[in-house]
Amino acid sequence: MVHVRRRLTANFTILSNRLAQRPGSAVTVGVGAYLLSVPDGVPVSIDALRAHFTESRERLARALNELEAEGFLERVVVREENGRIRTRTYVHDVPRADTPAAPDGPAAAPGPGPAPAEASEEAPDAAPGAAHEAVPDAAPGAHAPGEEALGKAAEAVLASLRLRDSRLLLSRRDITRLSPGVAAWLRLGAEPRRIAEALAADLPSALTHRPAGLLAYRLRAWEPPTAAPPPRAAVPWQACDSCERPFRGHAPATCRECLAEAA
Image 1 (spheres, helix red, strand yellow):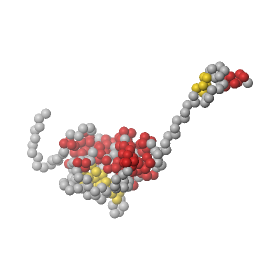
Image 2: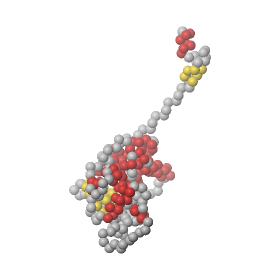
Image 3: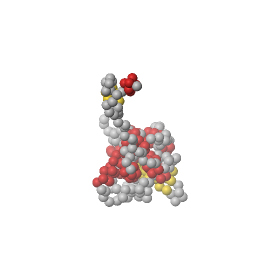
Image 4: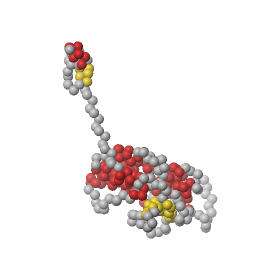
């Protein structure tokens, strides 16, 4: 391959190689490049992207989730003064993990440097509990060793959900916010495998926007899954004292056939 380059002075977009050469889905690279090329204020909902791309809603939703998980995209649910819930989207040309951390929270503004592209759109019909997505952050300060291990186990449960359903691909920020709820279930004795099964079970077919909202609702409103009952111990085999035929029993004895004959 040989590059034939021209010096562009208008109608161009600067992309980082981190995005342009991203391995995996070409749809994710294309959606990321498109979001960086449009001006501030352009809606970036699934319906708006469907009007531009020919891919399905599921593939576009998966692309947005992957961009958010890698730090190129940040979606913040905010409540306006009139009570309406809206989603504010920030598009980063460099992943957030590679830039200095900004204060977390819905009111947090982008950090210093070139302002990221921002777009606001009204939240579509969200999954149950999406309006109550905020989960209290963990208490500041050092954690005891047991609490630290519990937090890591909770994060592992949340990260594994994408293996059960690709729509449950969570960003690092969502995992951090949801892990206290999962840790609370772990403290009550629920097994990590059963927690993952409960959170990923019976998902709505239209889950294309903010799956973290649905998970936050389930962690808050549902009862933690109880531990599975231990398997019953098998009754051992015994040899009949009279005919030596095998039968199941807790101690050596005479089988029922021999007892019936004797009777």
